[in-house]
Length: 534
Image (cartoon, rainbow, N blue to C red; front, side, top):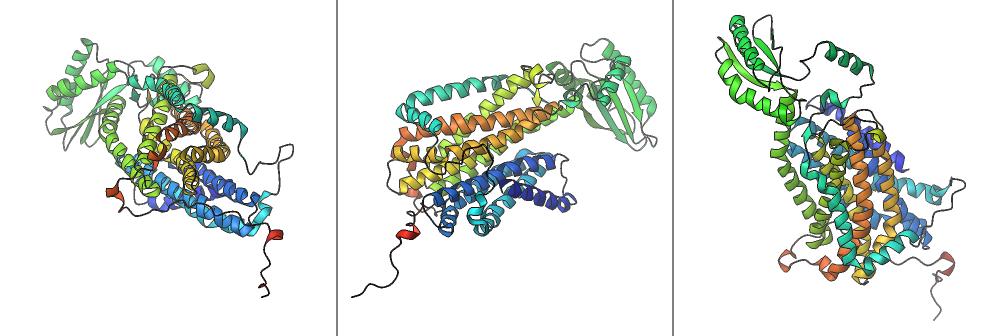
């Protein structure tokens, strides 16, 4: 059932993207991104819902009452989680690039469809199947323990709650250590270096580069006009060749390509360096700021369009990300804060959620930097380091991980809030809430780790980064963050977890996660409905 919900959500989202792509540009990778996010949230939402329905049945509720209890608890958690995930994905609209905007549209659509399916189709199917949903048990596996708490997590959480300060210090130290490589993060467009050298097209490319060296990484000086003077262009190019001969920033040959109608000219200037390193970037700045303004504006009938090419594309994209990523952070943080504030009526819960997610993202980004930029585990993962991380990856990792981690956060906090509303102390509520959700959260996390891990087996380095980064991020988030830092910080804060200033009491109550009513009595123990005799 989780797979069916996820697959249908993905299929519906991709179908709807079809007409949208006729109006707005859509990146060719959008289907892969929609598939990843659709599988992740579709499976998560279904597992949360099924788990709660099974628990209620095991406690003695009727099929109808169990389904109603699941709708009133996990169903509402799915709604809040889905809205939060969509808000996080909407942050990509502020990325400044058409690619991110198309990813935002696709992911928001697939999450919305998965939420609608979880709140309508899933309970409808469960109402028809009843207990038959449990048929088809896998042989040789023990039946699922539908009530109680997993022993492994009980052992861990008992020690975390007993020594919360030590747990916070140790877990935070591990995450900060993992995040240290981010301090020397370098992003670039991997280009042809990101492709495996074993595929036929790259074998041909490498043979061409060996036979005709010097034109691997070139900057394109583009001129546009109505009647370009080829002689003047050739003279400017000759001066460029002389500069290249006496400079360690440019190489030869400098070539010219003029369109037949003499409206566009392209002067290719090979740059020193790998194309994405500091040497190439410095050569690009020299070309743009010093050489081109002196040589090419003098061409009769021509106007300088700009300097493009691989290095220019990488530099400009990095500049674009640097200038826009703070808008993405601000939007995602603000939306997550407001949604969690209204849902749980606390200012501490959203602040803590943001800080924990930042730790998760930092640790995952540090691992990607250590592995792919610094070149560790190349043999194990079968790749050659390009000395950089893909330019688009940090923003994508932040947005996707922030959204998906909210699935777990809302689901766990909803159980804790239920226990608090029943009158339990914060310590008991935290222990019960996390222990009761640990098995399904862990299972859902491993499903996502498996899905993302598949991308680590692909040959394209960018996809390997995507797979390794998201898989490790989800694993860290579901274990160290949700299993150690979250309960330890909630234990220390106690009643302050639910602090809401008086001046915010006017806030409307969102789709709060209602507590579950007491289990219905067993049918054989129900009181006789006939009126008692006087």
